[in-house]
Length: 231
Image (cartoon, rainbow, N blue to C red; front, side, top):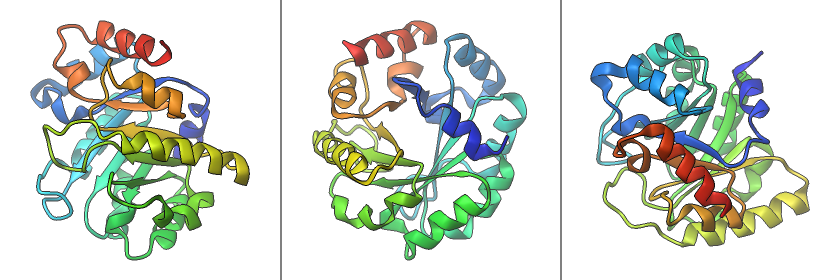
């Protein structure tokens, strides 16, 4: 099974909670993965930041590769980096199942999405709250996933921006009109108070950071988020 096929197998899972590993304990990563698997998590979200496209720096290919050796869960790799086409091949080789790039960071979005698909990896496009939806519309047929950011990528401590809800509603209509099947994902400020509005607007995949890793029990946190999504 190709990495893309692993992602497409999960397409019908809704709501799907994807822990953002940015806040996990990297000193004991294997134990963290075991706890997440026990909590019923089906896929992991990895935020890769380069200190250029966004002001923060996180991790790169070695963490992706290490995770791929210790879990069979699909890896949803979110590249918040300048000119991601330079590194797509390396991240695919490291074990990424889904690679999402930012429209704001791509000089050739179509070419980058095709590059990801050609590697057998699922392709995603992300856009920040202030980025018009029109910037991605010509390339939706090349997307397995569209990630609507409800905060600006790379900045911590931001409040949920409801513009993501508007974009999700529009994307649902466009998906139906064009008979496409891309997954709708939301990232940023997702918690038990915001997740239902996103779910009602059409999102089925939800990236969660502090609402999981800053809770005493991962299993309860994932269960609470899942229940809150469907009301």
